[in-house]
Length: 563
Image (cartoon, one colour):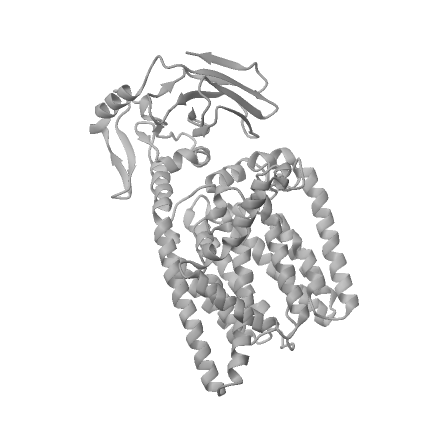
């Protein structure tokens, strides 16, 4: 992208397989522990959806796709999971193996891209740093990020073959580039702006750039029509477009953007950021076009994230930052190249390479340390999913268990796992789930819960009576509460009283336990039958109040209840 003297394209097959094999090996060495992981977070919903529907319906049937995600269009993730189902069945090991292979292929693609402009040592450095990043670690630990990983892979291939076309003028390269772009944008919409990268490339004759841009523009135009057909709007995301002009949202966007360095670079982010900016300035100092490329790429990557700048997941260095991290690592290759050039002006070639090796070593050790700390931090939440998933999968309705708070707030995971178990074992049953301890009785045993000390499911039946007694003391059976709920055209509306606060909770075997404000509405696409719910009010300094069980049904009259 930065117009350095052109170097030969990757042509030495021995080097390619040697570096590729090394990056594959490093991937499994760094992330090999995930091969013993279980299903987590959104994995089970994607799998249940894949088991329920034909894979092509996710690409061409809006009603089918919206059951999984009405806000985003990412059917490639289902197709990728379908491949694993065909190859491995419902074995997490096969899925995680695929995940690590995909990550290693992205690292190899990073090397290939950098080799278009840089020597092997700088290309390998960029690929290595990519593997050690926090977003890469998060991606390795979460199968549900598969579309981000593979979307990035195909985006890299699109750029690689586009550059090959611009340099050599062979139409077959442009065809491959356009095909890779199609898959990338079907994986995740953040790769759609890739079309605007082509005018920034200082490669090949002008007529080649025009032809390539036109090909990518046709693909992106077709994607826009497809997206409009599959979703109810073009913007998507989790924020209403009207919020974008809100001053508070603007401040949230600024906090998000300026918080990226600290999120990705860890404890000493100030030092690394300063070092990086100085090296980047050195790298682009001899080319005005390079400055345009840097700011252009920055805009293309950050603008698609504006619609999600205020969601809670944006404060976690996960899938939303994978593309940003990749671009950072890509640019680091050019930064080290510029540093070596500056060193050569003041030292011998050997001395320059030794200093550069020392700098790279410091960065690698620091990233390994940060990655270890991050892995330790997410280990507990991962274990909650792994252990409870295994319990649900292996045990039947002769046991009861109290899910952890993380599982209760992500209850779609339990629902998806239940559906998967039904597909795998026709006559299987599920352990009985206790959504709240007020639902305990003398018969809800043996009772289990996740224990954070042993990282296991612990039999807590001996504490059953004391738990029941404590709940009775904390509950006011005659507490005041007023409820009105309706479900029309996939929109769930509610109005709770008499208290106007955010201390209401809805309990349901479908959504788990969700905290709600006193009134509002929410969009549900995948509720087919009647929904049994119970509402609770939990004031911070008072007794709890619970409603009776109520039945909510699509298109039926509003449900009211009062105590």
